[in-house]
Image 1 (cartoon, helix red, strand yellow):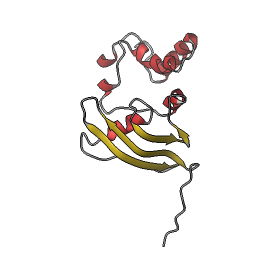
Image 2 (image 1 turned 120 degrees about the vertical axis):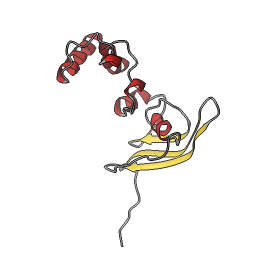
Image 3 (image 1 turned 135 degrees about the vertical axis):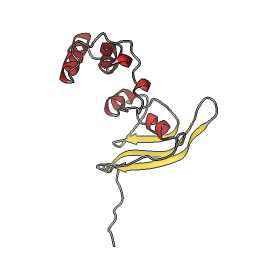
Image 4 (image 1 turned 30 degrees about the horizontal axis):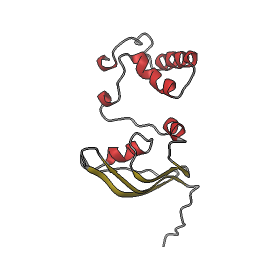
Length: 147
């Protein structure tokens, strides 16, 4: 027999309750999704294309906004703390073409720090260091899609 204990807000890092979302064309992508993920727990979202996996994940940093409740680290996801959560919750898409949207490598790397509101000088330094760390110094003006 395995002992169980009630999950608390402290050890639940992501909690979703009754999340519903429909795209503008009327497609109902999420219908009453409930999910709780504990600290240290590993979760795989599995399903066929169109099942709602990406739609669900896009709610975790507010890219999409449905109806229902989302709590991260015990805090509700709302307009007041969206910037904070976007700095904490990142997504990497399967197809790189879906996430490269700037005309140059520099602009793509600078997007995050600029969006966070960092001063221009700090953004320049962060971009320089980031590109240097991955061996891409000198690629700043290249097209990201042509690397």
